[in-house]
Length: 124
Image (cartoon, rainbow, N blue to C red):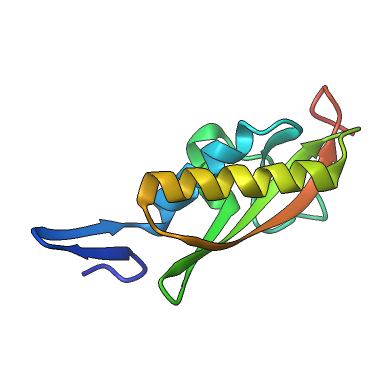
């Protein structure tokens, strides 16, 4: 059985969900939120956040299993001029809802890391 998968034993079998799949679900939920310009790579390169392409959204998400619940760290770049605390709060709610709805696994926490702020043209 692959390590790092979320497992659910059922009466007629089991379900396994890889953390990258949960990351993709969380990433897609995040980029739909108002004020989010995109997902960012987890590490900063030379102090600059790198925006991820749509097919690599899971790379901006870290998923951990904590006592049968999920802990999700999500790395984003927000739009200049938005209220960052409101965007982060909405983002946490949207990610929690979508991951729980899609996987059936409860989410213990969603941590938002704002890696950068970009203007409308993608630069600041």
